[in-house]
Image (cartoon, rainbow, N blue to C red; front, side, top):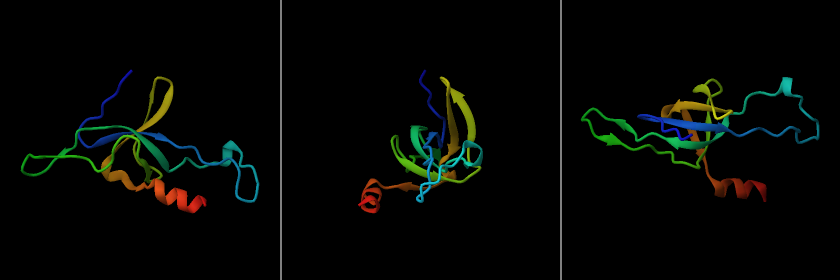
Amino acid sequence: MTFRPLHDRILVRRIEAEEKTAGGIIIPDTAKEKPQEGEVIAVGPGARDDSGQLRPLDVKIGDRILFGKWSGTEIRLDGEDLLIMKESDVMGVVEAEAQARTAA
């Protein structure tokens, strides 16, 4: 099934957090918080400004984003739990170069 969000909405797959802490302690499922990081799967065409012009979104498919704890609406598509949210709910895009630098 394909899904295309409308206006300035995006479809996001949550990226699961690590099951162990840095100290090696395993976190049980009941104590885990929902991750606030996700991957953009689909984006809408954009929002219209006051003059009626289409303003494209800043995020694109494949971006890794950070969002608020209670952002978006949870849905289930093809047996997978996903989120639909407005672009304004996104706090930022995680850049791949920054990830590589912190890992090194």
